Length: 544
Image 1: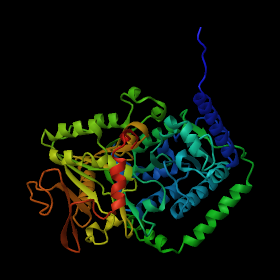
Image 2: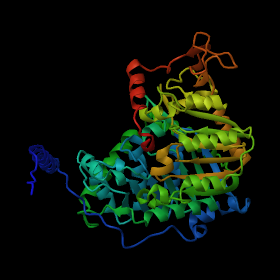
Image 3: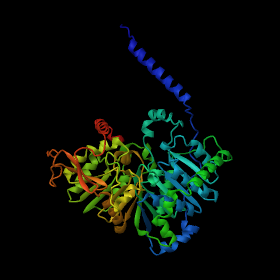
């Protein structure tokens, strides 16, 4: 019989693996990679069953009674008003506040809103705070402190096991399939009678509070029957088996750290109360209308659509009709004339291209506004999008890419700076169908939103509201604000100095009142273009 021997290379490979594991283990210990004992709550909680009987419900009842069966909507297309609306409904809440966000930043607006939430809890309002765990690194201590308040409970969606900021990297490597799938939903609801949902997270760049860059985004303030549907969504997530309490090692009798948080938020409020930002909020049209007793809500039928929270632990092949995309397809009437698409991350993929071609073949006009390379905050997604541009243009789809610099925008388009910053980036996720139906939510048209993350949105059947959004789109595609992307040498004769082989792109815009044309990605450096070109070579579209 022959003799079987392990090669020296095999032994060395095994040894290297053992050494690497030991080093990683040691590094995690040195980095303080403690685990946090989390648990599923044994006590499910739910939104108010009869919100119309609450003080706030009785106050808003006369308005709703004049529009039976309909919900009211106020379009929040300005960052200042978007923050003001959130502050107002938190201050107006008397029984419950539900907060659900992918990202809640510890910056000026984040602290201002948290101070209001803490003040609401102090006056007896139940506050349920549900955050995706991807962006909570370093916030455990503050969140645990808030959780000690007898009227506040904090839960985390799909949490990391290791809590250290650096150690999460190892957790992601070890459990990438699960941790790569996140809760991208955005919702705040008060007393189950008022709610805000749409594209904005909580952070300065979403509310016009930064001077360098701000996101152009859209939310909806909603009242009436639709809020019950949104509250049902929150309850489904809050009580799901992919959500864990952040109770950790503290008990609700431990008040010392909560007092530190209270003092910190109070001091920040004192610093901000006379700031230019707060003064600007007081002057918003929304605040002025409220002070004057005016309300400008549009009343219409609507439907809430959202992914099941189990999407993040379900194989793609088994998602079937449980996704927001599938529900949206059922909720929207067949489009006949025009589709307007706003999506900051727009990667249609093969299935999306098939769908776009299908409706283009029916003669439907398709117009898309997304970020230019200079405006995007995720170059990898732009690389995914760019490989489809030429095919979409040949299909007859109209493409616009938002500029980063919009200081030269005309007066109407000034809102696209979202607060007067020198830079802008698109963040709205909105679709308008035949100018009669509109979707506003958190879902981008990319593989991540469609297949990996959970999302939420509203479908509103209103020509008035769809018209408002379409008008805002028209301002966003002005040549002072966005680039029109076209094929050089096409029927409209653009790109005199560019090749005319039908495969060359040209970007057309206006700067200082003059038309300008680019035959390369506008306003970006050489290395940024190289980066995108390299990224586009890798098969990562399913992760974008």
